[in-house]
Image (cartoon, rainbow, N blue to C red):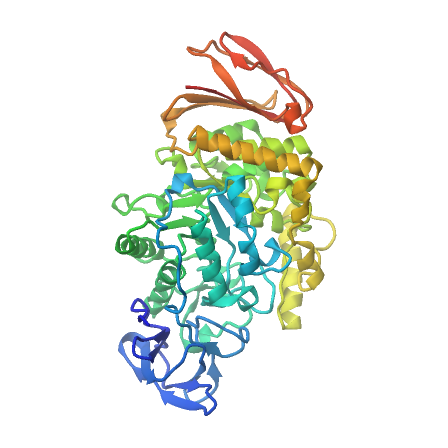
Length: 613
């Protein structure tokens, strides 16, 4: 067995059948390791520098369960536990990472511009809700044209079901999904089929049940408030130990689970006003690991700040994060399709907004936001489009609706095809939310399995308050009931039926076209000429490619719209038209080629792409 030399904390098995136990507790007076063997063993830990405690014990087998007794009083699970076989309130267990025989030695990751991401929730992706069951679906994703899966958080959370953002053991893999071995098998299977793996991780808060970190030290600070309570302590007294806990966690997933990239949840709620931001420190550490392992690893931030500093390199004063989610793209597209204007959607709803998102990355890049009632964002036009992940749907935008409706429940079939085409032919990195590729009709609801009735009620009341901004009528489904969770499971058989089958084939064709034309190549400001006509519901652009160029036209009107095409230097040839009978559309009058100046008429809610070499 090889030691996990990158970790000062947790249970680290050594090569000589010894186990080093380490933790961080800067204000503790004493720590005792309780090994839960047939004959219970108690061993004191020795204090070290800056609040670290450790002890090395002989003859500790993988799977051995343990707790720490603090200050001669109560005993708790390890904050850096790598496995919680009895749940968040039970003892921790030792994991042997050398025991798994990886079969992905030939895998070296793929360039980020080649990523087509498929976001999935393990518990509802299949009826079985496990890592093992997900493996059986990988050939379907590969056949669709997916190149990377993004797994919603799997850090141990309370109970059997949760979105994953209530995790309280950042190093432990959820038991109900299949634990450490199950995750490794899934990642290994992905790599052997040519699929990259992104893991969603949460470094802005701990969940409300089963979080024992506060018993050990100041992991939380009250200097700042987040929507989930006090912020994680990244710049207050004793923050160095917390920063190391988090940075080492990022490396842990990449090293020991062969994860290819991390999606960093809600980094706008990571509060750090020190001279070097936590994210910059993390990016440096990940870059060093990538150099050591001779393959790239990516950090992708979720942020609503519209702050290009997140993406800029350190020499420009940035954090060096590889990419970020683009909320503005989603909001601009969603509001054009649905006409919704509540909450933050009031800032969008025009063809101009979508055109700006396509051209400038951010719609709000220092301009005034009516929803925020202030100026918002800064410019990112000098950054490549491949640093932005875009989608028409994701877990947040579906699941944070009161009834969890997907676009398939909100807009007609033609609009679903339009949304898919806008996203998948864009110059950004596209992300699909599980099931959208065939128009899944099941909702994706918010669900929990907390054991505290008062906490369940608090969650219910909190969700109701959140929906006030969107003027939702009625009450959300009870998040704690298993039926709410079961309603959210994918209905895979729909893929073979009617419009659902056509939509799946349409997504497949779009992804084939994306690969053939190299639409994922980075685009810069000079590569795109974008236009719009709000009166006609039109957005259109021309884009230069490594080989040739494309003309993209979109009609968001429920009626036909005409657009004049200037005389091209070379003919345009039709690549895809969402309105044709082949895609169960209403029919199209678009010409197969455009060689002279002419006016073309787009069908209602339709998309077309012309190409030339």
